[in-house]
Amino acid sequence: MAVQALVLASMLLCAVQAIRSDRLLVSAIWLAGCSALLGLALAVLGAPEVGVIELSVGAGLVTVIFVFAISIAGEEPASYRSFVPRSLARVLMGLFLILLVFLAVPRAVAPALAPQSLTVVRAIWEIRALDTLLQVTLIFCGVLGSLGLLAEPRVSVSAAKGGAQ
Amino acid sequence: MNGISVWSISLVAVFALVMVGLYGLLIMRNLIKIVVSLQVFAKGTILVMVVAGGMQGQLAVGSSLAVTVIVADTVVTVIALALAIQVRRYCGTLDSRAISSLKR
Image (cartoon, rainbow over all chains, first blue to last red):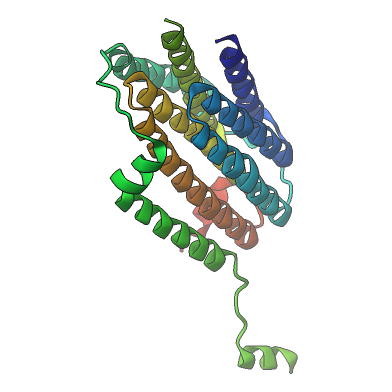
């Protein structure tokens, strides 16, 4: 239990630093640390499959995409003045926390259902097969969408000739 | 008892992660930092799926839902970062206030 508490505390520290950091690249690195520690925490909790996926996708792929985006967009200071005053943001956070505790804690202390002898592989490929198919479609949509958004605007031949003359 | 304690600690961590992500979403104006905050928020969601499944004795179902959240969150992040790059190209800044200047 001490290991789990230590991992979760480190993960929270990484998350706070990712939000607080002024430099975007440093922020992305803290986020990668947060993902890696979340993967470890999930493995300790008994869900190593999800932990491995989080480690490879969250700490690997997403970090690479962040660094790629920051290198294209350029490092820009993140210290603009926010629309929402910080005091109002804290009040909203407090209200949200109260709502979250009010909704989650009664369910958390409710008696557990009968445990199922179900593996993650069976849950993904047999019980939630349609969801898996939709996830694959979503990945394709994401790839096509990002390619479309990142493509350079095409210059027509006549416009290029006109520009040359 | 030991198992219950581990789940309880994880649930507290979920609350904290979601709070940190929400605070970032509220106060950030840099588009890439907004995506970072969204990622932190989503990490809380991934953890709560596994914790809820484990507390109810349905860890496999919770884990499969967490995988779905990871996939959806990654796709959302990729699209959001591509949009941020486009805003930077057209407006010259990553400030979310610049998006309002795209209105005609």
